[in-house]
Length: 222
Image (cartoon, rainbow, N blue to C red; front, top):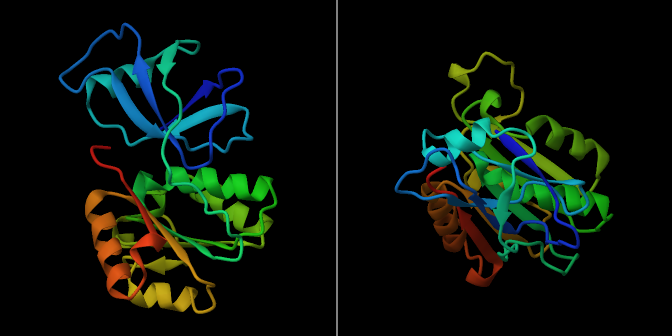
């Protein structure tokens, strides 16, 4: 589910950053507390502030799901360094699984809005098209920004009720090699479930990529 909040006045952030959101006097709470960290899924240029998350059965998310429009929450200042590098000559390679797409949605839409010349290649893995947040608008963005390439891949199409003509299977060396043949000095960004992040990080490391050219963010408990 995605949730949109009014952006505080004079409040800025960089695409890819995260915020802490605290519920004020929630109707219920549990041992995990009333604060969660969310990567901002919206671009800085968008009017509202959007976060998106998988809905687990926790007190925080039960309250968040049914909050009336207009409910106030507390937000901390944005933080995090999973932001787009400055050198536009270097290709940005985004490797995303599930709800780990949120920072990359923000960065991709921000880059398009600002007409950045960075080449961006986004690999996006999900079980089924039904599970892929923001898939349709990312596909549309690919047609609008010639510097942006989306490679979406599904790993459990046998459980899907939708047609799919894109990639299947997990993101691996062979898939990366097919799409990154002409990538210029790529910088890799990885976000998703911890197991996926660790596995892709190791795979890229072992292929000879310098540690300084790999940036990661784990999404656990979502």
